[in-house]
Length: 155
Image 1: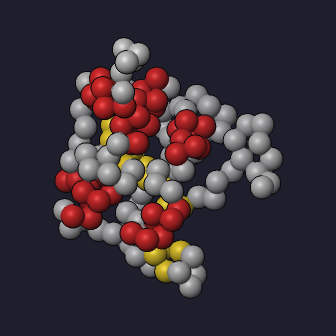
Image 2 (image 1 turned 180 degrees about the vertical axis):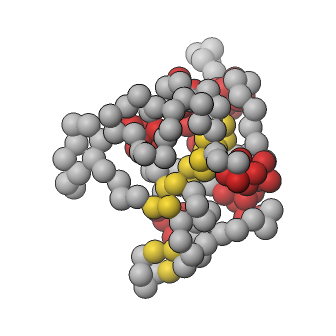
């Protein structure tokens, strides 16, 4: 035993730093001008659908795109006072992501308890993915991933 904390301990410690929200609170945050950020990977979005109006930012791009003072931030990131609700599939990776956003100065960042699965179970709006077009059946905010600094964007 190394004495280092495991992931469960790390998550518990991180979650002490902010108040997490449930599905209804996340929905209200979006209505009040907050930004819902879906960090699930594409296969999950295709399988389960999207939250209409949520900004899709893959987890590996999150800090580049949401840094309030970063040169690669998205236009939706209006400043450090922005309320951001990070959404992953079940509410684990989103806690780590929200903590990272706090370190970048987004002190109102939080995550959705239970993630997308909790949102869907609460009966909140979900846009189905249309495989024929590769797009959601109902519009959602989707942005093509731009290369991070130092990347060419070529595979």
